[in-house]
Image (tube, rainbow, N blue to C red):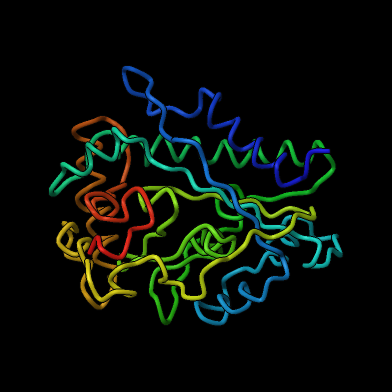
Length: 286
């Protein structure tokens, strides 16, 4: 009998493989995303309450967002599973952005706009399929009307639910100097997740340190994302979210609209042209 984990993974991968939503909406209708990575975290995993204490009380744990969507539910957090996925950028998109110096490539801008539209549709599809099988589900940041931006006293820009932290909890990756999530498919990715009333065994979290895959933190080397940032938002001290957001909204978004005719504020220069672009880097790549 097919396990629930395999069934869910197949649903997610099949959508990305066959749905017309997975498109850059360019002349050739190129795909936005390669085959996803999928992981699972338990709804009662202590890591979610740790993140809440570390980032801010506004950050939902899985039960809190589930109860916002199903307020009459008395579900135990032990019954909930966080289903997280990673959508890797295609090779050509990465190559185009790798060659960029100050402004992101058109394909990258398209992936941030139309690829993210696909990510939202994937979340809706996953929720629908789960509910058709009798499993209540919610997509916290991609579909919940309660999701919003917040301010963390420690980290600045934040939100009620972080897709990258959900992926970290599900064993899919750790954080780099630029705050991007480094996964087995690299850092040139997008994330999504669903919280469901379904029992799936958690994926192994093979790391102990949230910076385990970053050469700067583990080896004292690399730092190649620092000069890649056109906003000067990355330094040896980390990622200045304010500078980053200012550049995205004041420079990248107007550029995308004026040159390509659609709204997008993806940059991703720090996710390309670096050792962690497409894989977890080896220690000798610094």
